Length: 111
Image 1: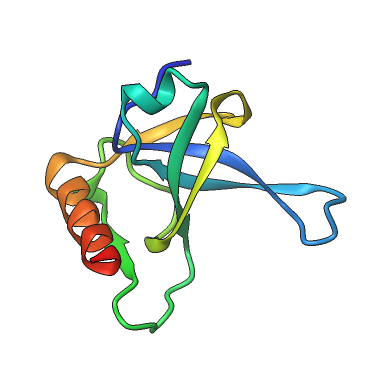
Image 2: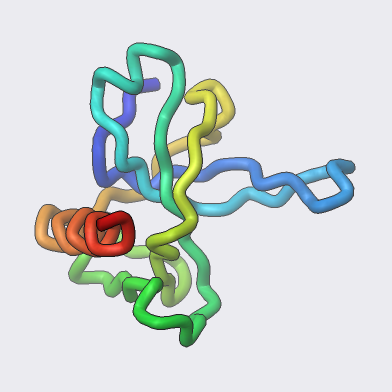
């Protein structure tokens, strides 16, 4: 399965006791150079709004190619690497303007 920057995918997130997992959405932020390694860099998406110094980006239906089932937020500082084979599927993609907003916020928190 091929993924592109901005794709919203479903990934397994393990429980803290490591005895199971929940399926959760995430945004792909890596490029083809990373994907050729078999890995993908992603940013967590949640339906829970957190008031924590502008670390969340609201996603509306106008920000994505396919509507998400619930109001969602990208958690800008929740970035991690995952093996591509663990991704369960793609559900939507961020439109260019929203992806650029995400990249700008990531750059802001690592500067």
